[in-house]
Length: 48
Image 1 (tube, rainbow, N blue to C red):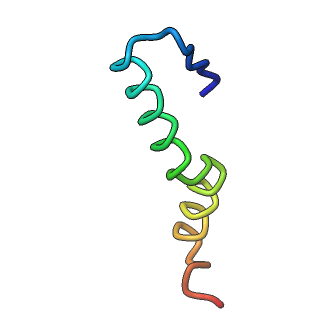
Image 2 (image 1 turned 30 degrees about the vertical axis):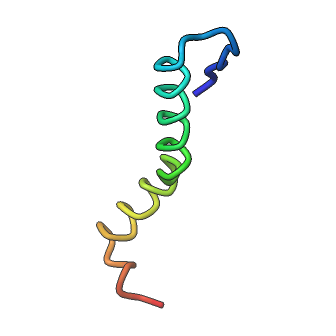
């Protein structure tokens, strides 16, 4: 997300953008999801 939080933005708008940015940082990148799905599909998840 390439959002710019403007200092003059209303408080609710700033809070919403900050919450969205925090949520985005908590999620693993899409490539990690793909990797996990591929490991699960191939049975590689059971291997060390």
